[in-house]
Image (tube, rainbow, N blue to C red):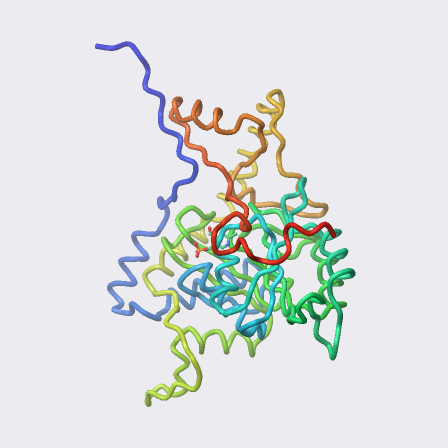
Length: 348
Ligand SMILES: Cc1ncc(COP(=O)(O)O)c(C=O)c1O
């Protein structure tokens, strides 16, 4: 027999399904309501109450939430949409799905979210306004929208961003995929713009396996979102579809998981905030640079993340100790389909 102690495996992030998930899924199945149903209605109500959004619309993923939000914002093929260069690829993909192109802007090196000074310089130097629309001077394409990404739970100064967006006629869609539970000045992420996208993928702070939601304060947009994600069927009896629709609605048994997860969300947030404090204290000696949380912002600290010089070595060492870590995303402009995107290399 070996005396060596096997260290318990510490995963980066795994779903916690120890609450009422099984019970509610069984109830959803027993109800025979699998597509829509009462759990979907309840989950949407819980999300709206928690975030303070007037409406939450359950949808199949964070990616589809972004895609539909772009449509709600009036983004059209050939438009340009400003996106931070450090984000999960889904943010930029959603722009492409519309037939629009992202303009990639670097993030602030300390907060890792949209750099508003860079954005201001860019808008001042490289754009012009005509008939209440903003255009990129170099090719006269319309810049219709901007997507701040609340990376790892942090947020850029949203009041500053709102003022800039207002001045340049840009519509704000928030990528709040990883920021459920993050607030700025007491206002939840995803509720500043015309629409905000949440994700409930299995590595998120709450999960439904796959799923997402659109947050909005606009009754008309919520109605339009529900219409678009149910194939734009304009009557319950006839198969009349009044525009291009999508089959994106969140299904009832997954929403049942979401309802159970929402019951635990305050505990998950508290635990995440305690865990990051532990890492910050313990790793101060190794030169780890943690994300600077913006003023007046409470982060959900979705993933504990820090910058180190010898990243790959550290990942390998931690792996040998049964501790899972991973590098953060590769910047979008380094991915083949976004290499030609206009923006990142310019010195504003
Ligand atoms: C910043 C960001 N945007 C969008 C998404 C896409 O969400 P989903 O995986 O639910 O489609 C994610 C998911 O990881 C994300 O982290």
